[in-house]
Length: 376
Ligand code: MG
Figure (tube, rainbow, N blue to C red):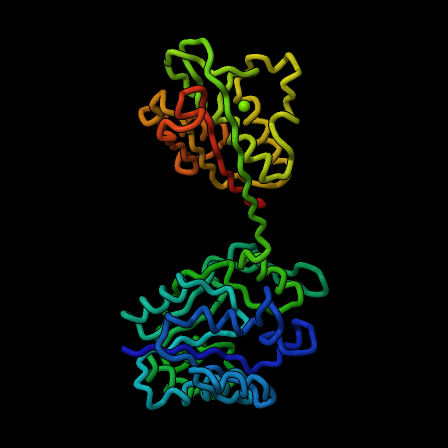
């Protein structure tokens, strides 16, 4: 079984604005066509790129690659026919036909279409219409339309090669897409789930939308935190919110939860909002003996206010004693509760320092933490 993709890129795309056709306009640092072509590399054996004769620079450039080039026709159907003809002699059994202006197509959609072709001779992704539909005239609603059987058509549309070649040869022209061509030839077309993100760049604002979908403008922030508290008198320590019996306690103005302090500082660090000492000055008596949960909750709330969600945190405790392992799960759960995360987004681990340095001599406990925040 040999599969090919035909990327139809001969259109002039004037509705999207700009001086050049939309497929050659920049999107997140590359051209729209580059993203679309990349989506199909490693998914199919051959890729045909259908180009307008006017795009001489593209012809020069892509003739140096392993793409098969074909000339655009008088309309979209003509371009597809030329693309199909360019595949003759390659032993192709299945073909995916895709609009170059859909650069956000996902591997999942491509795989679903390919899987459906194992059983059916034609398939295409469709999105059930969810908005109410009106009929209107002169900006007045004149009727409504039942949407229960309506789908928005997407690409890639997949076909058994011989079936779509025959369908195109028999079609009189003016089809909206290849599904219409196939159906006119009596070919049954099965719908697989489309994706709302698989947009077709049509209007000028669609470029920014595509970049958002691709996550190119994603704002990811990392922060680190480090804290130390010394041992003193006491019969327990509180680490990452969990009380652990011990023959000494940790000294500090608050409850001296060194792990929670490091995580709190990591979040402040990711937000570039100072540290615990600035938000909760040790000189202020109201924080004496305070539960460190107050500090962490403040950092979580500050993230929310600034439009970030916490993706994960990782905390390392450095000490010889107490042993952390038996308590690590409870610590993860307690921290996750305060952070409003799932336990699998919170890591708590421990190490000794091989009896070296202040932690090795059990003079205190140190903690390091990393937090990852993503713009919501
Ligand atoms: Mg501290």
